Length: 126
Length: 506
Image (spheres, rainbow over the protein chains, first blue to last red):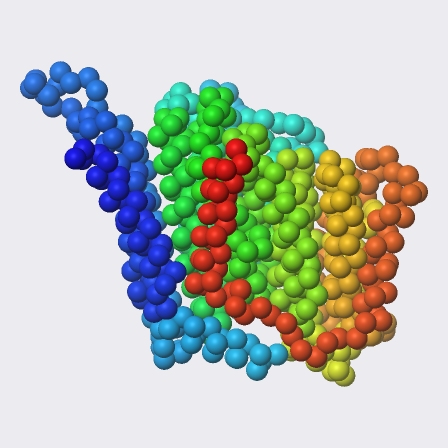
């Protein structure tokens, strides 16, 4: 089987698995883990769009057989992906901090229980 | 490279330097951030009034357009940057006497700088980076006092917008695969943008921009944050998503999504109005009112949404800051409790509130009247009728606050000593800006008596209704719609619907 098609299928499955996980999991930690899975899938998609032609990586070698190769894969998406990885990391670590605070305050990391508690608190204060 | 281009590059990069100066100087930090926003107000007021239609674009490092990062200043970015500067200036003035530490002013200045860079950016990935940085800082700002509900609101916002941005990246990757560039001008020249990519990008931007069903994080985040931060969120940060929609107009104007954006705007306008009518928490009323006004901006996105976004930023921040004064005075956010309390409030608050109230409901000679008319003039007839209904509704739900204020106002208390001075100066500044632009824009267009009657009558009828109809005791807040999992299911349904339309109807 062609490797590119296989890679594409794996990446699409990863994105959908992550998204499905975010919807179904009630536990906030699990939700954030699945968000990470979805993020990995999206980053994989960026790499997939340049490796589609299976060109060699954009690295210049001195005076070898490799230096004669004119066609390289596009280096730009990898540079973009580094930014996306950093931003995803920042978002995820910040949200884990907030989950930590929420678990201390509400003694629960279940999404629905926290939602009910928050709503009750709001109505009491009004 | 000409002077203008070099100045624009310097301007863009210096926005990230100034916040760190604010952090470094402990006591003069506030002053530096004030001067920062005041200087930018000066530059852009000159550009708007003195040189309308300026367009400068430049690439960092002197590269070709397809090799480097391009920034672009056009009319819509002038409007957005000017509104952001006015709002930030008045919120910094408003919060300067309260006990906020320098980290607060650092974050506010950093989000301001990032927003200015967003309003200058002209490629899809630069937009992504600036939007994500804006959101990261706004999560911190929403939960700045670390109250229970603030933490939860910001966590909810975080998860939803993270999912939205993963969609955005998928769309960007698709466009890069087909066009080999991310610069919006180059994509627009070559045309033929993949429709699937557009679905992902537009859904992600609608998640950020405060539309009904897409961004249900908005009510809790905007009502739970501290007052100055609520003003910034409602006035500027919501506009970040809308600005990206306006910048990407060349690539989605002729696609099948363009009709959907206008109807999503109509739907948002009406549902935001209905939800705002059912609340008794003042800040929640304002949060839903923001949603309803975003609907207006989206309907006018292909004509002059940018101008209306400018108007909305100014009067919405003004209303939020006045509500802050009222909240501090009465000590409650419940509108019925304010009505029952024995305290009196000065007539100055009523006058300032009425300026903002008449501009949000679209009275002539106030800000927002001529822009609303221009938006509606290019839309079909039934949308015009719906907008008349909406302006009655808007006048009604904000008129409730107005009627309570009239009952509570004491005509003898006029002196300024009665207030915290800074808060009053901030709101007064916004009111002057409202009146200046309102009178200037209304005189700029030719007005006839029936036109004026058409826009005055709904406001007056809404206002009288708000005096007649009593408050309902129960509050209607659709909890099920605001659950994270349910909102994500709605995203699946909406994206599925768009893909189905793309496959079967086109």
